[in-house]
Image (cartoon, rainbow, N blue to C red; front, side, top):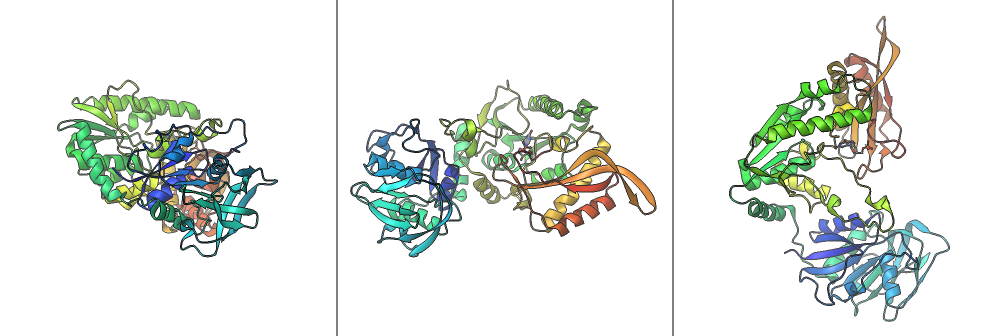
Length: 511
Ligand code: XMP
């Protein structure tokens, strides 16, 4: 059992970030909805070392303020309230929260008052990130102010006797310069948690767990897409059960240049079945231009192929999936659906009636931990840093009819974009970068000849999770280099444009 910090989520957009920051310090941390009931006072699990009450969009005075079981404050472990969490502590202990006349959003500077262990080692003045409307107007009895800012006279407070601390600012965002130091002070200086959470340790534990779960002879099937999640899931399963893991990689003819070969090379020691289903998919897509239609066809074909192939492994009773922690966290939905919108895309949808039990070795991990785990397991940098790639593949980037010829044009243009982004050292900073082929023909001139060919759009976006995205501000020089390479070397494209749409209102993919 790992020492653990528990976060109760009141709906802040930063809640996952708090958990990641704490895990980065080597302390295991879980997020639970604020609606979760507390154990009886003093009877929390022995591994519980501390509790964080997150921020959130509510006011403690809202008639529909999120429910909170005050017995969480009586577990005998330290509590840190952040933003809304601090206001909740204030209200609970008899202090006063005041609705601000204006929201405070952005940079501020706090000044320490006195000497509290929470702010140990942090300079007298320190930049922080504020994002709140309400604030603490009067301290509860027994609490003292330990930091203030010009707009927020009680920016942090403490009551060491009750073992409660509160801060109005957000230590989890990088704008709060000493935020990590503050979180370390809480988890180590106050909670005395052990830093026993590491991906090296995770491998050993998870391998043992998988062996126990599937038993001495159990066999597992894995739909390997080549993406980070399914690759790392396969890698840890392989470490645990070797050739009793059967990976199936379906080449649907809609992959990027070199993808099939690269997967084959990376997983050469695995029991890997590579299916070339190009013809089946392209035949089914013949003449189809409607985006939804394309997706449906691809999803259905994938299921069919996977079903047929997996039947060969008649002893397998498990199906591996690369589900990650963000998909598992119960979202705080009492404030409407916004917090619960989730990307529902996975490998392409698996047979709904497959009689296989699910095994999800990554369901406790955040994406950045999955990458570290992948490296620990010996996967290549190319694999663990791979940008997301949609299940329907190039089909949703090849607008209009999908033909082998147009796919090949797109693949070549896309390879140039990929190569240039990597060469510029931007690949890891960018969420996704790729080429799109548009069925728009325009006139050009090449040498002495008139051309009449299609258009390539370059797309590059920054994003945290694919739910929103902003256009990557690529240097003009890089864009023009891509453009001239594409136009000069890819037959079938004579014009290149750059997509300047953010999401929303655009989407990342074009279809
Ligand atoms: P959109 O285009 O909706 O994409 O802004 C958001 C993110 O999801 C990816 N995406 C998919 N991934 N199957 C997938 O596995 C799909 O059908 C699918 N459609 C979009 C997209 O690449 C982006 O990262």
